[in-house]
Length: 229
Image (cartoon, rainbow, N blue to C red; front, side):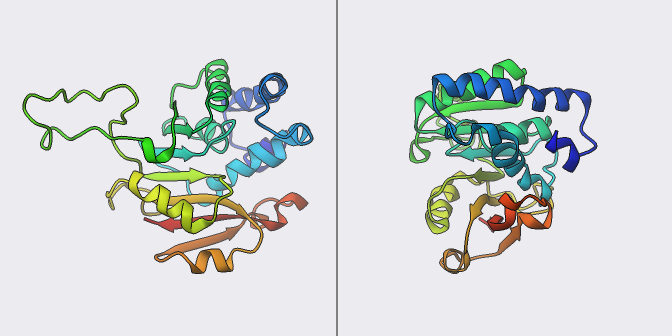
């Protein structure tokens, strides 16, 4: 399997979960189209390994909270959740049927470190801290309300980088000592020429070609973009 070629230290459980993705996505994609029918046979290279490109620039520390914004069928969130079992991933998409596929795949794999939410990014609310909450208010988060913001937002969304930064910023925890190798921010998988997109975004940025890690032709134009938020 192409995944074990690039990540040779995976555990037996991780390998089993990655191997199970093929049948799961072929089955669910026939019912609910979350991956192009022409591309489903390239699942591991174009979707799973592409998602794991993020793992080549950062190894999330245990306890990190990561939001996958516009997850679609669960990419990059589900492959990353298999790779980092001690990290919490929250998959968000505005299309309910895509979240349904995510939920089915998560359940079939037995992943305990993934939650999902059918919502637009702008609709996501966060619980008030006990200090800010009124005495007579319930401090337990209501359904759909997140207990805390996230250390990172990851995404394969196709929107311009500046727009993705704007949408992601309200979801990032202002916690500069989170303990990861990179400060909290956005990590996006993008393709093509990114100079103009990146120029429109202020702040610290890191653009890494995936061809530095993966030799397949598909990755020649693919990049991982990190923006500190």
